[in-house]
Amino acid sequence: QAPLVESGGGLVETGGCLRLACIVSGFSTNEMGWFRQPPGKQRELVAAISADESTMYANSVKGRFIISRGNAKNTLYLQMTNLNPEDTAVYYCNTRPSILMINGRLYWGQGTQVTVSS
Image (cartoon, rainbow, N blue to C red):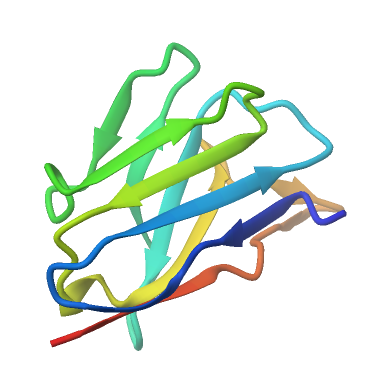
């Protein structure tokens, strides 16, 4: 199974909500993050959770997104509310502070597409 599998994206209207999930396989997680890559832009960190469950958020999503883990610690969630078109992006999960490396290469999952219509 792939080490990181994201799901939960979709098409929603402005003001809508989505819950993204990330299944982590094959390694234990301490600090994890949700990243996103809007069309034509660079990938950016939107939320992170540390080993002690403290969280941080990009200013653009603060107050609207919540990052959390499942009880088994191998699942990462991103609850997104009050979505707006600027949130349209492919969303990825990954390790923090360093991106997961496999065979000497940075690894990213397939991501999950979030599209917010105006």
